[in-house]
Length: 384
Length: 163
Ligand SMILES: [Zn+2]
Image (cartoon, rainbow over all chains, first blue to last red; front, side):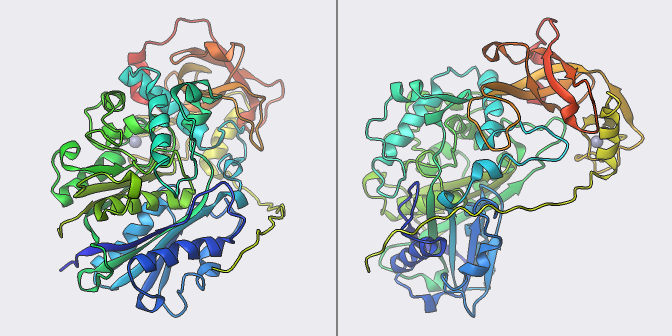
């Protein structure tokens, strides 16, 4: 029989352009200690550690899990590292949850990080492939053509991306951990920002952040702490090839399959009605409406109407990224786990100023690579 | 918490040289390019034509060698991006348009640079043709860029399934 699994503690660092006050290990430790404190447990109560980050070549530290073992209190314990590109924060948490669900461990500490100030992600993502000209400029350059295809396919008006960028940055003002606190954010500011990867403007793109996120994941008989946990009601991962004839790059099949599976496990038939808040991986503005369709919050071609009508705003009927999302903080490897942690915080009533009233069901979502890896969870207040 | 100072980040460039083996499928393709030919490979099962093939159909998992198709040097720009941000290793000056070119008769697009048209006039469905370097070799860099053919734009319906 599978064990019930809950998130009993979450810990985040302050996200920033440059956390020069800490090393990579210090950054990770900061998140981990906060997660342990939130769960009211000590290092001794942890059975295993699962950590994740994006490609090693970002920071140029190969297999950082080796050197991070001590900082993560993993000496003498099982330790594992996960890597699924940008979705890694989500899949790392799901590997930890899986170990508990399978009855292998009672309490697992999971942590994901990125220290972009010590790295060059733009370089790492614009790799020189032999015999080919270098044309793709980082993640934005990769995703911009697919965004253009979405706009054409859905006939969405041009301003939708700007609305997402403004909304997420306004939400970030309510989140003390968020990297970007753009007090003067406005429609005009975003509209006038430089078109760096046409059709994507500078302010429609995620920042480069330093940061780490950690969570304590526990079995039902090992739930601890003063605060009620967030229960995993569904967990799913899916992947697909980056290149095959007829691949739908706008609305990828693996994303749809992953969403269907996570909803099936959680018994959700109408996600927009049944999910109270969602933290969705939106590194570029237009991915909000695109994922609304991929995740069945809106019919195909109508995701942008949710953004346009204000449904995805913090006071809308389907709040998306009340934390400010990836558009406001992007320590790449951690970004997926932050989605899960923020979803858990909404369930547990610990989201402070960006708390949405009465959240009983929340979703965490991450994607990565060339939109080929997906990791999703449904968290609930009630024991599933 | 004790007072903490700020660390200093020191840049230490590292260099890693490696030998790259193109493999059988890519070698077939690159040898074609060296003769100004763009060779696709047709999957014997689904009939899709892969260009820049890895020697097998990712959908059916079967080898595509023997299914060589000599593709025309023109096609349709399905979608694109205008790049306005410089990055390390960049081969062209900003702003430039690069995008997915679906050669006539192929089922998967090639990445290419679009020139001889102002970047703000580049559009989905634009018909383009290859402009080759004077000296060609076994590299995709032998295709200097893609330029408009002057034909009317392709109808969206003809390429929407490739987006
Ligand atoms: Zn096939």
